[in-house]
Length: 325
Image 1 (spheres, rainbow, N blue to C red):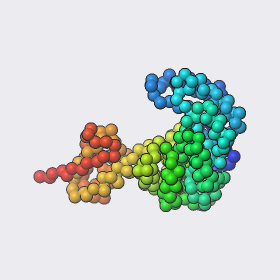
Image 2 (cartoon, rainbow, N blue to C red; image 1 turned 90 degrees about the vertical axis):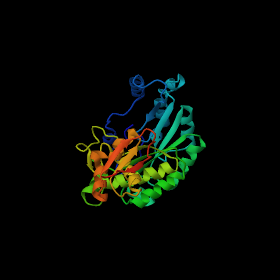
Image 3 (cartoon, helix red, strand yellow; image 1 turned 30 degrees about the vertical axis):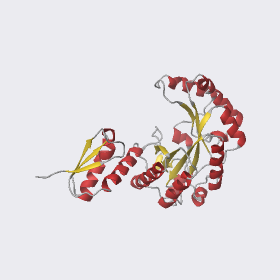
Image 4 (cartoon, rainbow, N blue to C red; image 1 turned 180 degrees about the horizontal axis):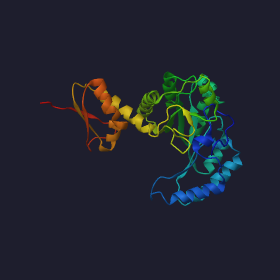
């Protein structure tokens, strides 16, 4: 739903470029998309129809209903389990929530981005942190699952403010979170700020280190991190709409590798080591282009060899000293 229902142009936002979609979504589109994708999904999977891109509850309520009505038959016959949508904290009301409940919405994700008032104003968000708190309370009162979305590297933001935002959002008891480092996109106010030197974007390394800290912060509090970084599209890549900022097509993988590097280096390292992990995590432990292996060599002067151990779970690491003769 590119930019549909949004009353503000946030400095970072150009939803048509971010989503790679120009055409607005109609009720007929909803039916066509569902039919096209249902046949590709495995049986007995948990399936949701999701309205993302703009602020779903910001569009007229009759239009919301017309779109959700196209999902209703699939919910009624059990092929779809519910509806997930994203929206703004200031477009939550009793009327809206009652209508969403009527059509089988199960999860509401709020684009919060930051809980720092200065960052919200500098980003032209148009809502306050207090409105976020009230919206979350109302969503819980109607027994929806609550998701939140946080951005890092916004104007006037700092690592400390981002960590504090995470703690404040955790206190609002969300079930899940998405974390997006800010990208400078063509045709946005942020691009102008970047070009005149008023805004300095995060580097990939800076964003990776911060997001690794945020992921662990959320996970330790029981909040499911369901995405880190924007999904690459034809528009969102190094050669299209991204002017500056920490874009990487496998950003989430970089963050996981950073987390593993922190786990490994929290152990005492005296010499060459074998790193034993879940076999499915080997690529993350090694890092993009064996980045972690090279870092261990450079920073600790050791050779590291990664081996799979099916007895270990995700994030479990066992280090074994390599005997030298």
